[in-house]
Every structure is written in C-alpha cells, then in structure tokens.
Image 1 (cartoon, rainbow, N blue to C red):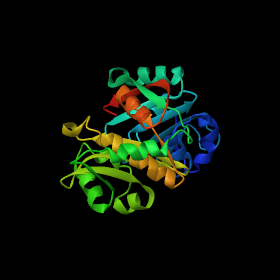
Image 2 (cartoon, one colour):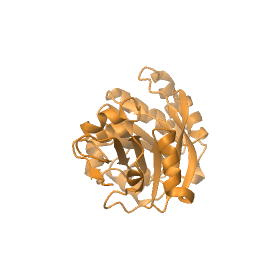
Image 3 (tube, one colour):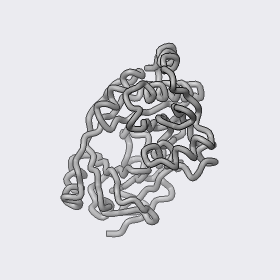
Image 4 (tube, rainbow, N blue to C red):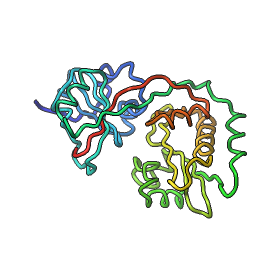
Length: 256
C-alpha cells in the first residue's frame, strides 16, 4: 500500500474531527509536524507526526503504522491510536517493540485559572531559586543538556523559538534546573512541557515555572494546554488549576 505525505493538511480535518489534541491541531494548521495518509485526495487513514508523538485516525492502516518520516533520526516514538482497532493494529505490527502505557488527558478550560493563586505560587518560590523567561543564553543551556532538551527541541534554532515559542526557567547560580516551555504551538495556544533536573525535584521549581508560564500565556491570549505522562504530572497540573479528564492508551515504540 502506498503512503502519501500530505501538504494540504486541511483534507485530514474530517478524520481527526473531535480529537481535542493540540499537537494534532498544530499539524493540521500547518504550523508544526508532518502528516501522511493512504491517499492524497480522499484519505481514509491518516498519521500526524510531531516531536516524539505519532497520532493515527480513520481506518487502521499497517503501512502508516510502519511509516517513519524521512530524515527522522530518533528510533523512539509514542504512538497514539484513535481507537481500539488502531491499538490492535499497532500491537500486531510492532509486537515486543511496543510498550503499552497510560497517559492522562487534562480538560481544556480557558476560564479555569485563578491568577491570584498562580501569582502566590510564584511569590512563594524559596531561595536559592529564581525565575527568568527563556532567552538565548538559557535556550543554549537547555539545548545542551539531555534532561532539558525537550523544553525547546521542536523549534528550528533560537530565532524560531524566540518568534513562536514561550518558556520560563528556574535558575540556581545561573544554571537552569527546571523549566516550563512550549513543546509545540498552535494558533490558539501552546502544549506545555515541564522538566526538572533530577537533583532539584520536589522543591517547588516546576510548580512555579508552570504558574509563570500559564500567566504569560493568559496575558497573550494563548491557551496553555497540558497533557500528563503520569499521575505526578496530573497532581502538579491540579495544583495549577487544571482538572483531570480521562486516561488513554499509547504505545512507546523503540527500534522505530
């Protein structure tokens, strides 16, 4: 079966209709990511790839499940099936290479944030931590460390990040030890990525970075979308004003 890379991504909108996932919106809006389908005119099956994520919708298609975008170096990807039929097909294709995992969707509620509460979180950040918006110096620090790269890695260099991205870092002695940033962007907002260096976790830095980034988004008329990899991330989001929505299944593929 043939696979077609889709340039006019609007033709895929019916296949992804109703899926409240900002990374899909980023791709369909032509802002980030790449898209593929079984046909370039009247597709029945589709794949959207952005960062470490691959989303599938429509009629399950094993050729799409095997498809790796040209030029992609990473052998790791998280496959997100629209339904159980896609999930079964992913398991059949990737077998032992597919690790089934649960992620946690967070409700998208633009009116759910308490600005005073978020300001209080920032003010309570203890010494020796300080917050700073991600500038070129911090961007270069972030990109140089494996633990923090995902904060900015989906952008084509600092100029692209400066133009389209948005982020906050927590510093100790001038070194980035935590951050909250735009993993991806779409017309109406961003998808938040939060990371903290292992030796500084559970000290309030990630919470303060998240609070600051949410406020910066609200001030710009952007929605700060959150999706949780684990229950700790759900708990962190709830401290910031988010509400858990539902669990969903993904497959972590190694050897992609």
